[in-house]
Length: 340
Image 1: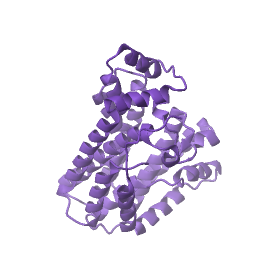
Image 2 (image 1 turned 90 degrees about the vertical axis):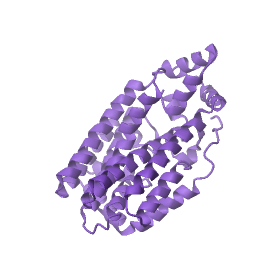
Image 3 (image 1 turned 120 degrees about the horizontal axis):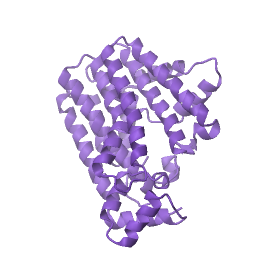
Image 4 (image 1 turned 60 degrees about the vertical axis):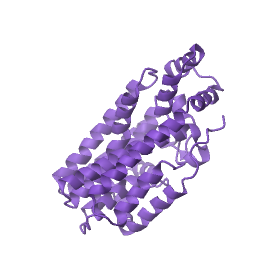
């Protein structure tokens, strides 16, 4: 395994901001976890077994916390945000199950993926079950608006998965093509999670849009750093295999930048062979990282992430000041420094 390109220096502030948000919404988060566990109940024993393996595997619960924080920013006192936040996490869980099948992943959050333990067919079907439970929770809120927001996001996420397949191994993929994938595949759920919380709290249209914009920009920044960490992180911290994106031929932004910067025929041929043709040798990942270091593609990706993080912070200008919006701003700010 090649040595990672050490780019992300310190993520203690990000972890601290996440923990602070968890503390601010702790009671609601406990209720959300209860709603998630209730939704995973089934007389078919394999369903709760697989769902629990995924849901309880140590995720940050960032997406449902966006829903809780958005609602809490307007002093919402109802209970609909609990069901919405649980629905958001179930949608996220379902997409992870499907992702791992499509990507043939073997590790997630440091543990074997469900498809490795139980099989691809089982993973797809349990993912479908989680989607169905998510929609039941949405309906329970009685809000057509939030149902529209989250159901539309679910469709966009699926479109993003298909779009990613279309760009995979495509060495001609551009920054704009990559951004379309990220907006759909990752950022759409961040945006919907935050917007739905504002909607259920009866925030103004401008404030609902502000939370949508915050979630979208945060989601893009978050994915950009994920892409960097695939080449610069440590497997024990990431909880997945370093270099998976390279091995799968994914045109993430570090690769897009590196291919665009390639000047020699040797370098261009390398990217065509390894990414375009999926013909990889044992030392190719190390060579890919060396090319990325030479053209600063990882640093440029972090700079792009910083821009989107700043956009997320600016979106909160329309939200009344308070502990929750400030913590959300901190999370966006420090997300660019995270290591997992």
